[in-house]
Length: 68
Image (spheres, rainbow, N blue to C red):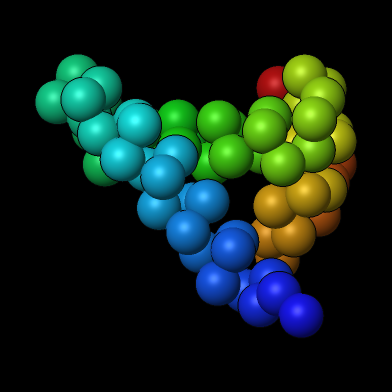
């Protein structure tokens, strides 16, 4: 049986390592947003912002994530 928490953390770490070369261009909140968006796109397998927001399971309502 696989340990899904370890797999998730390993995937997030790999995505973070992939995004690190771009961090010098961004501020800290922008770099975190970039990492979260790449993770959301990969994890949800969708380019829709709503799908990525739902998959991240953050403690914020979806309507606030999608509002522009």
